[in-house]
Image 1 (cartoon, protein in one colour):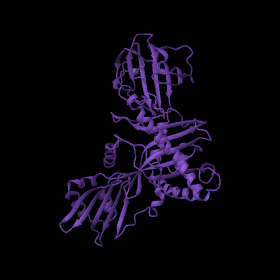
Image 2 (cartoon, helix red, strand yellow; image 1 turned 120 degrees about the horizontal axis):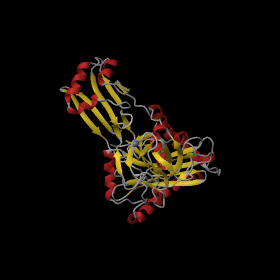
Image 3 (tube, rainbow, N blue to C red; image 1 turned 90 degrees about the horizontal axis):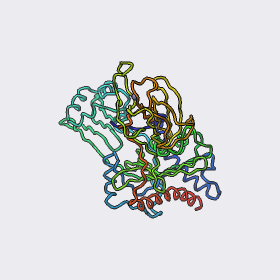
Image 4 (tube, rainbow, N blue to C red; image 1 turned 180 degrees about the vertical axis):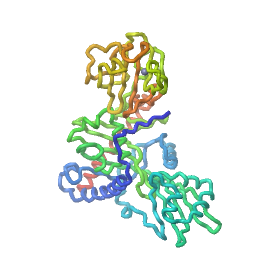
Length: 479
Ligand SMILES: [Zn+2]
């Protein structure tokens, strides 16, 4: 089983939002240049201009990243070719140019020629529904669906995909294209003999992009204003989730900078990729993170000195022990009903010390119904752990107290609804209780010693790019 920790508070994937961001990004990039030129002589920093609280521009250059976790096959082939030539961080500054100059993206909507109709797939759409809605021959539909095995993909349309249809005056299909994903399309063409179905895959190019801004109220709104999409904002929240509680900690003068990948199709930005480096200044304290993939192909985010950005958890809150009840469905030993067992029970002798599985803050200590004597801890902004049926708590443990990983917080007992002496342990990520035995725990490990030198050079280069970009704007302003 796999668990994906997407912060579920962020809901910004609407098509309108995406388009707004897309247009906004191009526009902001352009405006940025104009501003850079016009404000050149004034000593204003980009921040101090209230009309443009943030900037997002792009720079073209080969990525020094090696990324084994890439999901897009076409993109990973590009990366693979870079892997051979050793990740070489240093590229001359002159190689950087603003791609905003290179093209003028005026047309954001496709202009259908020869009666191309464009349909955005919505929830519940099927090809036959669309055909009947548009009054297109259903005989064509049948022929298309049976023409090639690959036309099967047309039977499972996904919301957000784009379908383009060309029909003649008799309402017969002459062409059809389903855009499955950027650069990945299914193309149906009509010939004398019948329909031909082709799967067209175009590799995506990558470029570096940069965004920055002041955090006014939330990272989400400030990120949006800076032209960042939900993917990049989500990644930033995750990367810094151990350093910053984005709901509580943000201060009026906080700022962020981020360097990330952008993927292009025919020179047009189609999606964002991974964050390569990011910085948040929160309450005067600078937090920086750099993405790095080690020789084993494991990717993580590290502080510039090579420490993992994320804490990790101990797998179990008690040592030695035997698991007496697993996570999942079971008959409750006291209630004699089937219920979800949302934790793991460790059978251990009465009084066995229970340790905090991670650094955190006590958010509950006391008696809680069937749980009996319970301690709950908050770890960063995304994780919580709970320890129940305790016989007692560590002396002085109170709500709000900070605890360290491995610190004793209580002792095994059988308070609440418990048949025998055991510890009931729950692990919660983003509001969902997971099986602590199988959940993918965040990694903390520092960069391995033998790769430290390579990492440090890489990190230096990434942070230089963050700085450079800002510098570059100022240079342009002075010209
Ligand atoms: Zn239990």
